Amino acid sequence: MKSRKKKQMMKDVTFAFFDVETTGLEHYNGDKICEVAILKSRNGKDVSSFHTLIDPGRPISEGAYAVNRITPQMLRGKPRFSEVAKDILKRLEGTVIVCHNAFFDMGFLKAELNVLNLPLPSCPIVDTLSLARRYFDFWSNNLGSIARSLGIEIDYEQEHRAMGDVRTTQRIFQRFVQDLEKKGIDALNEILSDGKVNRVF
Image 1 (cartoon, rainbow, N blue to C red):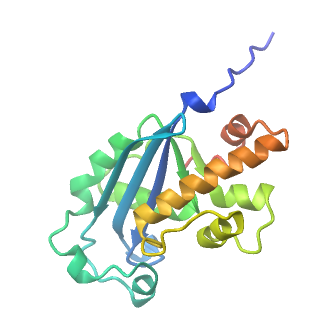
Image 2: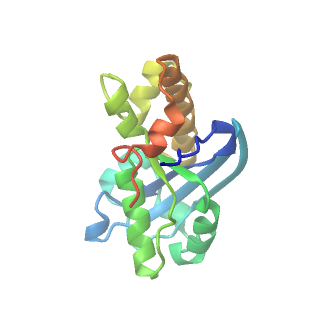
Image 3: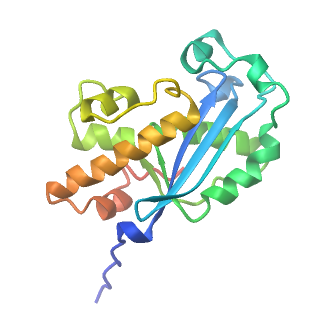
């Protein structure tokens, strides 16, 4: 007789909302992380936050600057990724990681960790972009458009900066869970058991 997998309750899960800003779009062509933010929450309450700019050791592309407005002067004297990598991993350990476009954020994290011969944390990864595509019908699935469609307040001064996007992702995820549960979907357990949205890299 098969044993039933124990259902997880939202209050028992520690979520780590995670976002990076980068020098460009292609880590496989040498682009690097230049900003990281992590916001951890449990039972609906924030328990810790982490934010740092990072000296990427290379220029920020014009395209990236047009989005994140991070200048070389802002990065001068900031730590290299190697100096903060283990702290980042420690903060993510034992959590459910939530990103918007996890393929991008986790892809960059994996590339940076590979250089240091460090593994990605073995955490479930939930992608709000995948959730939006699967369960909802927004006119655009970028972070800001979803937030505006849901009436979620955005800090426009921090839009496209790591901590600002992390907080927006958190609010969107919480709203998604509420809306799915109204439809009779056991949102948390379906998300965590669904390989299409629970991306483990």
